[in-house]
Image (cartoon, rainbow over all chains, first blue to last red; front, top):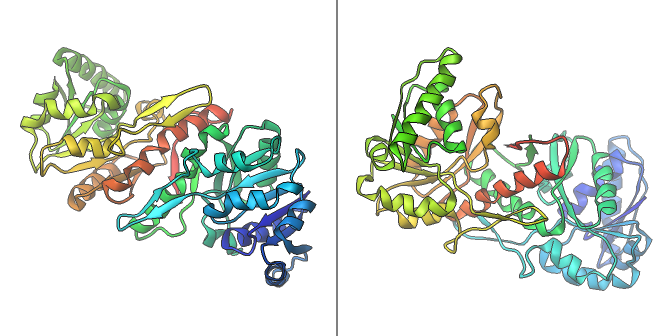
Length: 222
Length: 222
């Protein structure tokens, strides 16, 4: 499969790119609003993987061109860009392309981070609302700490949760995710259940803040 | 210390009573609106512990009398009774008594369980609002599955999160919680961060619903 990571120059995009490229045989496409930036990121990811004895093929494109070539499009962009990014690529999306959204709306104050979803209930549901009819939308990768994700020295033993209304698409993303070493995908139901999944992200940040011994907190459901 | 479990005849109360009684030296008081029901529960808990070679002292009272005797009062009642239960015992609460709230507001539909907090933001904050001034309120034990908690054959390796505005009270509850075998308490900040903690409860129920191999789901933060 071809996996496009839009906003793939950011920290979550970097981590997913490195781990998909290292642990799976899928083709990784980095998308950015600026194709030049995407190609720079590709160079740095390939160098990082090459240092570790891997020789993956990663390619860099503008977001729309990356999405056009992909079977799976991951919207690894900040939450307030998620809807606009979907609209920017809507002409190249179809029922065969799975749209994956890891973004979470949050705001912070002196107490900590707080879940702050868009009015429709969650970023996952916002993406589904803005996507063309028939394009399957899956929420995943919300609470993988970017620091751990992008550091290939960190061996994972982590879970990520999947929400979506299209069970075939959910299953594709679940299977794909389980190909990453040490990462287990669990299902949490339809998009209507996305808010509880997304709100784990501010929580793991608060746990890291309030417990000296914890950093880049992840989760195992047992 | 003396720990009162109000609504201690319910499933969360039962599990906490059995584990505190088995694993710690503290005195456990079961409270119920009906003192007779509290004493019946005590008999059954003592029989269960006796079968396993433990001889704890547990006592049963009406809620107010249990709270009056206790250093720590756990409101193990349904969320819609939490506020009224606080008011029913307010005359016996003081700055020396820590009020602990494990309740979570939820509603369910065909998709799953959804977090449904009271208007003030969380049950933890509701309890703090209804408690007399100066009484420390701590949120804890929200996402311990009742089935696992009350089954002493289940060996824990689980976390529970603590929120509260009084750091001494938080520390007391954290230390107490860590005395239960296999249970680790982590801090998640002040009561303003309670919503993200409470909303893990519908999430663990959804995970159990949508993954065949998972039951009575708990969590480890790593």
